[in-house]
Image (cartoon, rainbow over all chains, first blue to last red):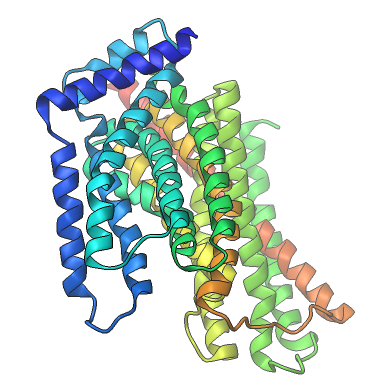
Length: 212
Length: 229
């Protein structure tokens, strides 16, 4: 139980910092809305809905990247990570707390972005909404680990997209498939499998990337 | 085996690898019978497939060494994992190139998104290129070793997951699937393939060892230079 309490405390810390500073979430919302407007002009007028569904996943992945790039910045700037690593809690709790906080930001941004998408382009089915949540979980789980790795490097803003985008390809495949295929459930299974496998892997390996 | 005797065995191994490669090329070009469907272009199969298998093998070896590093914490596994992945990336890019050439000769296109193996390799290639970016961006030390190891482990998990994803997507985006002719090989074709496979694997192993020896010498030299300063 203390493990979950640690996770909750860590996630709450991130949410509180964000509520006070408002660094990340407004940027994510603005970014995803601007991206949708860009897409409107990037798509030729007579392209079908399928193309718009494809671009939705591009917007989601890049918005997540924006949030993840900021995820460890407060820790890095104020040397908080060293303190967290020294704290008497399981290190994977740090990862889980960060994943939950980033997931909360991403979902909050999508509360604005998805209705905007439905308004501008095409309605979203229930399968597509489930896929959005699954993709969010997967990308936040893997992303918060990779962002922690990248935060220690010299070119961290550059590094994270390079590492995350190849890993996000199965997520995009699953998301697009769930949105446009008549048998979307198969793609949901793929997304769930991805989330499970990579969440366990990230959870187990986080300790190695933050300890000296 | 001591380090110096390991180095001494290298020229012999390298000569063996070169000889086998030569034999494989002769067998592939002159001895193996011509494919009835694809003609002469099918002969690239004897080089392309062994290279691809070797690349997978190198990535697997890199991940295995990475796992050993995390498990046992011995420093030498870091370099071994890095060198294996480096070789894997080299053979992976060769796979992409030879695969493209074969695709052009067989199907008339340099690139086919419907070819699972090509797409999978592209994803892997991008993934492992980022491995080098990560490695060169971190300060040298145990943390870099462990971060690289974790990333390398992600790679071997990514292979089956992307393969599944690409397989699923294929039916969606490309309804026409290219059916390759069955793998019914004659025994001389199969023998040629086996010789090439052994040759390429041995070549990769020799390159791996050479690079490892070079990198270790480099590190020793740097240490000596620090000590003399």
